[in-house]
Image (tube, rainbow, N blue to C red):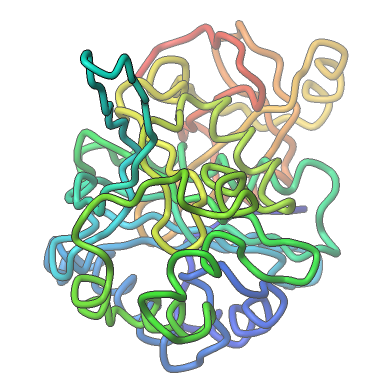
Length: 351
């Protein structure tokens, strides 16, 4: 059975193996043992309420309970940009007009921005290609929304998600090659790695302070603005399904879109329910005809768990098999949070 759970220090070797498969562009998952160990230490401090607001972040792993293999990871940063500035490009429009000459032109521009300072951020989503089946990607991605709903008091009002930008068939970022490289004079991977390590001062020092006119960029770079990596298309669709939207911001390195939402407007905040558990294999089998794939979560900060389970909604309780209950560490009389995997309304006691 596949379970998303809170990550701990013992997951370091598994995270290193995943990072080696991720490739360029995933800033927060690099095959760097020191960086990943530091990330896990920061998670432990967050869980123990020992981290400052600027440090706080959570990390989760997708585990196959039958083998113990870690198949993916995802994370949430609580408040970005509080220790070092968080940069995006804000898309804007500049109009140049002359009545005397009868000229009116509208030009798209990119402004270096810190607008998302203090937002929570969905990050570090990666699923091992060998496990990209059986709705594992949806479980991994959407598990974070269950955590946000369960512990809403630990997060600010706004949420964002920086999506991996477009790379061409050679593995290069057209946006970076046309813009970033001109100012940094270093390879994309090196700039990306420095950012992943928290070394962001060079961004302010080297990036242009004036707006960038998009029309001045090559066609391939223009086409990459707001476009996601081919592997990220499903991830973007899932986040938009939950209520996030691309407003005006894109990544400064690869031009990937940044999705945004109020946490209170997310589907999980409006439609998830907290219900008591019934553990009964026979009753669960009898309900199979009316059951739909459902995210079911349980646990505290240290032992939070999410599974994808067939559930029949509209009942007074959630009926689970003994095996699923054990995987979620749920006992009789405990409560769980439930949300259909696809956008549907859950009946019950909203919480």
